[in-house]
Every structure is written in structure tokens, then in C-alpha cells.
Image 1 (cartoon, helix red, strand yellow):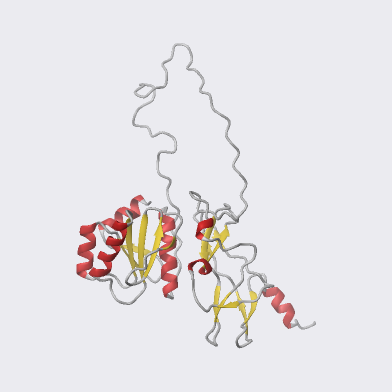
Image 2: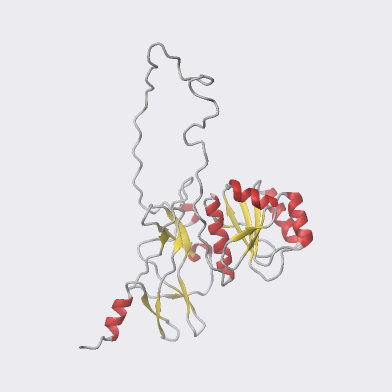
Length: 287
């Protein structure tokens, strides 16, 4: 039996992994892109470009750290962390992604959360519906009609239950930010991006109607951290929420309760845990 060559082994592994060569030390690795949970529950994996060379990460920006990938199951396009690989020589490599583009925030179609550079088929216009007249001898279906009890909900007025939240294990500060962004999206917030104003500590995230602060440090969030978040949210006329990896000081928790700020603690599994009644209410109602 012929022994497998190195090339044959690599081609077999490419079904799930791609070879990556570090441009600094020339060391070769096998890299598999992580999968992320779509809101429909299906896993989404950024398609890796096996022909392009990886690029060293020299500085970070929001648009380069995230990439828009459509879900193969439902077709929804969301932004996920750009695949990266840390080489033992100390260089962080950004792995090229095939068939998708990083949209600028200005290119996102308002109201959809989808980038403008992705081709989407327009939805067919529904034919106008003309209500049929009631049969002779029956009353019209108007509010208060005894034929339709008032307590029955109309179609599409009951809330749609959310799927089970799929967490991302927290190993780095970037993982904590990713977990908070996924949780906000799971709650129903759209167009999540880095906040325009940088908070005194941690990372700021912004979405429609919500400003979030993510503190991935090992110290509890302070009273000043909570008050600064609230003041920034007040100046932008939006709500706010705090995610902390190490919890909150007692005075910070009391002030958040008084100001109506939901507080969450990020456990290492990536699942935010509500720590006050305002967080419980946000978890129950969503966006």
C-alpha cells in the first residue's frame, strides 16, 4: 500500500481545515474556522480562502475584526468575528475569508441589518387583498362583535419565542465582547457596532435603542463606571446595559438599581447571567 504523501494529507484535512503559513517564521499550521450560532439555530462558519495568504494583525478596527457571513439555512446575513490564528512566534494572523466582504457601517441597509453589497432578491409584492362582504344575515366583523371574543389575540400580535441562546466560550477579552454582542442580538437588538464614545473602562457597544458596556477585566465594575454609562446613554437618548466579567461593587449595584440599568455577569461559558431585577425584565421582554 502506498503511503500518503504530505499533500494528500493536507487535501484530506482541507475538508474541515486549511493550511496556514506564518509569513514571519514560515511555520505551517492547520486551521479550522470556528462556527457561530445563527438566530435560526443553524451553525454559521466563515468560508476560508485557501488561495489567499494570511495577513499579520498590526492594529485593530471594528470593520476589520468583523466579517459579514450569510447563513446557509435561512439566508440571514450577520456579522461575526473574523477568523484569526495566533502563531507561537507571537504574530496574530488574520485568515482570509472567501466570497464575503467586510461592509462599512454606512453600507448597511437601514432597517435590515444586511450589508448593501450582498445581492438579495427583492420580495414579490403581495397582491392587494379585498375583503369579502359578510354573508347575508350576518353581522360585520367589527370590534366588539360578539362573534369574535375580544380576549383572543389577533394574528402576529403574540411574541415569537426566542431560540435557545448559543454561548461562545470566553478565553480572551475579545471573546467577552463577542459574547455580549451575540447576547444583544439574541435579545432582538440590531445593527450592533462599536460605540462612538469610548467608555472610561471596557468596550462600548451600540445598537438601535441600546448602549452597552462590556468590562472584561478582573476587577468589579465601580460606581463611576455605572454612572458614566448612564450619563452617556442619557446624552444619546437611549437605554443602556452593563456586562461585567468580575461582577459589580455594592455601591455600583445599588446605583444601577436606582437608575434602572440592567446588570449582567459574564460567566466563562459566555452566557450572561442577570444580577438585578432590571436585567431579569430585559431578559423576559427582549428588545
